[in-house]
Image (cartoon, rainbow, N blue to C red; front, side, top):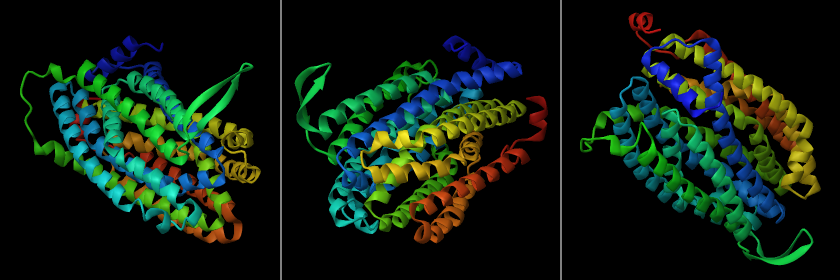
Amino acid sequence: MFSKAATESLMARIREGGKLRQSEKLNLIIQLSIPSMLAQISNVLMFFIDAAMVGSLGAEASASIGLVESAGWLFGSLTSAAAVGFSVQTAHFIGANDFKNARRVMRHGYIFCLLFSLVLMAAAVGIAPYLPVWLHGEPGIRHDATVYFLIFGLAAPFFTLENLSSSMLKASGDMRHPSAIAIVMCVLDVAFNFLLIFPTRPLQVLGLTFTMPGMGLGVAGAALGTCLAFIVTAALLIYYAVFKSSILAWKLDDEPFRWDNTFIVKAMKISAPMALQYALMNGAQIVSTRIVAPLGNIAIAAHSFAITAESLCYMPGYGIGDAASTLVGQTYGAGRFRLCRSFAHLTVGMGMMVMAVMGLVMYVFAPEMIAVLSPVEQIRTLGAEVLRIEAFAEPFFAASIVTYSAFVGAGDTLWPSVFNLGSMWFVRLTLAALLAPHYGLRGVWVAMATELTFRGVLFLLRLWKGRWLKYDEATAQTRA
């Protein structure tokens, strides 16, 4: 069932106009989702382990990272938005069996995204010294917060290349290499952080004591370790995308590269609403951090750890979302609009079921999940309480994640971005600002759960109405 040959055969049938039975559709969704889920989960485990390592240093170290974490997500999201503008075009060309133009789009993507990442890097370096102050962080954590954000900002080009290369491979239907390399990144991150965060110290394993070397860099070591892991991962992904892919490898081209502005313009049309959305969504996360910051270091750390723990539960949704984006993108490019709609509905339903189960797991094991991240009892108690509040919203969170990914695959990014922004700014932040003074961090998470449910309903309504799928009716009738 889970074989490369089976996946490639089914994907080829999509491009060639062959019929797919319902069982084959589900089979294909599972084959594409499982590797992507493993990649997403390994990424979360990486940050989970990072948080646990830093958590062992105390509440202030954890709070320093939690303070600037949402700002770091902003820069990462912008590189992701830039990559999507090109990967969606690539998926459409591959679906239409036009591999030559798929590779042309890819080359344009590398040039544009690398230049864009240099702009982001300069911006991160410029704001790093002031960011903790703007976020109302306590003086004792500002230095570590600045250093952590600065290191991540300097690594922006590598994050961008990693993101773009992974997106291109997924657009071609290759989920396995990005997934395997993501697991490698997790292992490297743990190893690098183990060496960089802690000082040289004696360790005891199986009754044997030995001296473990370490740099003792603390919070800075956590940032450096993660960035080094991303650098290695970016190199591996570029190698497979540019040199080894059976569809995307540049050696398959027999003509010299020529610049074409139409690819850039189309990428901007797709990416611009997403970039604005990511900027304002992460801006909302920063505002949310400002709402939490006055509640104290315990609340900041519990908030950060609960977000990390929750991500273990919603990453399967993103894995299924990757499959949705690939399948919808290629069927849309092939002009098979009924099949496109069918894949969207199936992936959304599967995502909601999986994340409903994960929400139940999160509710039951919330204390144990937070306990792994922090030895501080106050942080553990508060983190588990807010995590259980969020558990009830997970199915609707899945609806928004997977439906959004399906819409992106079809190039529909404007209204989904409006939904995300309106829901975040007018529902979550408004409720959080009203509830935080009276109910503390618990009120903030009630606002989050309410907003995620509301957002999921909006996306399901748009999916059901079908306005996201723009096509010519005559073409749709002949290319079902």
